[in-house]
Image (tube, rainbow, N blue to C red):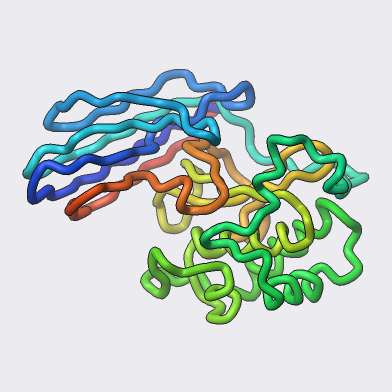
Amino acid sequence: MKLQGQSTLIYQIPQPVPVQMMLRPYRHDGQSIVKEQFSIQPSVPFTEYIDAYGNQCQRAILPAGDVTITTDVEALVQPYLAPAIPLPVYIPVAELPNEVMMYLLASRYCQSDLIDIQNLAREIVGNSELGYAQVEAIRTWINQSISYQYGTTNATTTALDTAQQRVGVCRDFTHLAIALCRSLSIPARMTVGFLDQLEYMDLHAWFEAYVGNQWYTFDAVQPQTQGCRVVLGYGRDAADVAMVTQFGAANLQSLTVNVQVFQE
């Protein structure tokens, strides 16, 4: 199958401002990018680098006035398939690869070291088999217990806030899931990108957990994890995967996202 994703951000810039962006698809063996186009209008030069998580980051100075940033991606994708029985098992911390250890630690929005988060995680998973089944129990609980509502949270909302307020959007659902997984010593990371069949079309956030010696996809917004996805970035939480970070005034006027999937 082929996924076509496009995002268009329109900013009003009072005066020239430096920005960092993460708007090109992640490059790895599991993601086959057929073609892509990234543009800034009016045209300005930009540079790129690969960050600590392997994400492609773009840097530019946006000029004063209206600025449009567009990403077009076409990728070969496969619909999500749940793992077969027996489910992937928990990997003891002593046996984890070095590169996943950072995803065990508490982070800005995912306070897995707090006793309230730890108690909630134990309550949710109960006697679930260690590993994938625990993560799926967390994902299901969030989907059924947290109300999805735009405008109820903001850029400072944390996993603990969401656990207490029981409301949020995909970013908040994801932060809570990550915090709960890490509190059980299961590595978890945030993922952002394109997903087809979203009820409210936007750039989407979901999470991955490391069980059975590999990363598995989970989406707490959906009743069941499903759909075709293209990853733009990975990180510990939203602080690592911001689509645009501006170092000065930049007013977002609109964000438009379109995603379509076609049979090859």
